[in-house]
Amino acid sequence: EAGVAQSPRYKIIEKRQSVAFWCNPISGHATLYWYQQILGQGPKLLIQFQNNGVVDDSQLPKDRFSAERLKGVDSTLKIQPAKLEDSAVYLCASSLVGGLDTEAFFGQGTRLTVV
Amino acid sequence: AQSVTQLDSQVPVFEEAPVELRCNYSSSVSVYLFWYVQYPNQGLQLLLKYLSGSTLVKGINGFEAEFNKSQTSFHLRKPSVHISDTAEYFCAVSPQGAQKLVFGQGTRLTINP
Image (cartoon, rainbow over all chains, first blue to last red; front, side, top):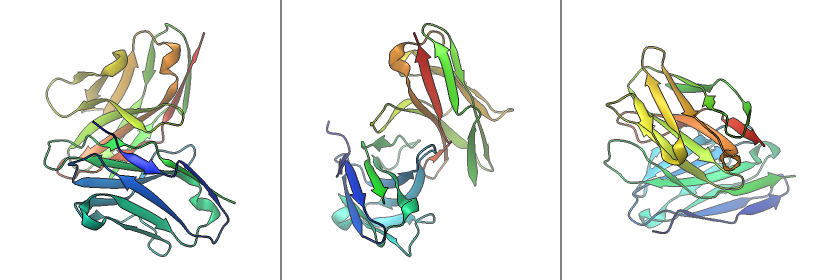
C-alpha cells in the first residue's frame, strides 16, 4: 500500500514570497490533515478536511495560509506572503472515516526555510 | 480543549538499559491515547494506541505503555533499548468522536553505546 506522498521535500524562500505544498493521501482515506511542526515542538493541526469539506481550520492563520482539497483527493497548502516564523516542517496525514480511533498515517513532510 | 505535556524534552540512556518516557494529558472529555515515533528526516509512525480495555498496551519494536486514568498519564516504556531506537517520541490524544490529534512537544531519546 502506498503511503502519503508529499512534495517538495525541501523549500527555501525569502520572506514575503509565496510557496505551495502538495499532498496525496493514501487511497480511500477521506480525512486529510495538514500539521505544522516548528523545530523543537510537536505537530500542530492547521486544517482538517473530510472529503473536500473543511472540518477544522481553527488554528490556520487565514490571513496568509490557505488550503484546498479539490475532488476530495489530493490537497495543496499555500502560504502568501511567508514570514520568518513560518519556517517549519509541514506534515500531511490521512485517515479513514468512521473508525473508533484516529490512526493517522503521515507523509515525510516538507521542510520550509524562510530567510 | 485538550493538552499534552511530555515531562522530559531529552532522555539519554545507555544501550540495553530500560527507559520510560513520561506523558500527562488534560481533557474535559474522554480521549484516545497514542504514541508516535519520528526518526530523522521521516514522518511520524504509530508505535501504539489505547482505545479501551486493558490499560497496558503493547506496540511495535518492544515498546509498551500504561494508561492511568486517575493520574491522566500514558507513560511509554521499553525494558532494553537499542541504538536504532534513537528518535523523537510524541505522545498524542484524540477526543473521542473527533478525528484529530493533539500532540505533546516531544521527547528526544538518545541511546549511547
